Image 1 (spheres, rainbow, N blue to C red):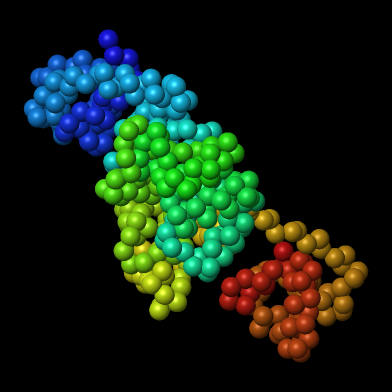
Image 2 (cartoon, rainbow, N blue to C red):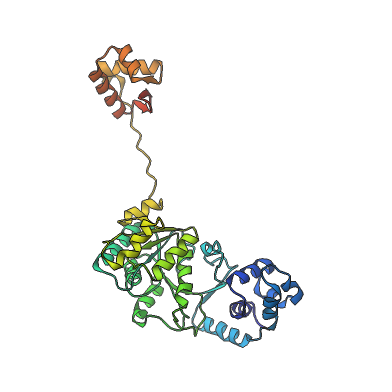
Length: 366
């Protein structure tokens, strides 16, 4: 009999069963085994399944392929992450088309508290390189997991800079873990796995990096990240698809602007212009936009001893101590101080933390 893992793999191989249908099935049955043991009559009555999908599930026979994939995972120490696993990326569960099964080699926590996707063109400029370097340097002290697609250009720069800054970084792939594309990044990928990062894909071994797999991969990048940061991209391409997907998932998107004459910035400028991305110019902007900066308590100002107050300050303080809040005009009348003397006294008392200003030119004792 197939194991639960093999049934999980089967769920990704069964014709007519996509991610949405698989998610509905798992939510109903709780595991993959019970899906394939369920009666056709029960399956066919489920919303979104019907007779065609029910017949496809009941007629699935290729469990040998599932067993081979399970053996491959064990041999190469690859972790399968199913929808119901605690280590499955919980952010992806909020996406309607969550991958049914992910294959993961690495040790980075895919449920890290802060995850940023850094994406862009494969043919970056020096400007793009500088943006990525400064960006990751700024994120480094704030414990951010960096993800990208391990492609040439901006992706590669993001992964390398993350390693340099000792941040965990995960590459999301458009193929199986039997290979690495592009092959020039094999050394980088190995370093990512060794340095508490990882490689993640929803494609089983033997799946080639075909063109139509990249948009599928991009939705994982968009759904996995809290914020998608677009550094450089033309008006068309994978980065624009990822940004659009992130918007559809109600995730934050930010972009670095560029020269209007530079094709590598046309996509970023368009995202900003159409309000699909917030404009950022540095890592500090990203941290502020995401509220990832630590909250700073305003230092309490210790009140000065009253004996240190000037005569004018003492008059103002006594008035406010008796009745507050008072308007500045009322203070002027009661104190009989000149306007300049009143302004000086109020400023000094406020700087010492003795009084506080309120909207409408009102003042009170702090």
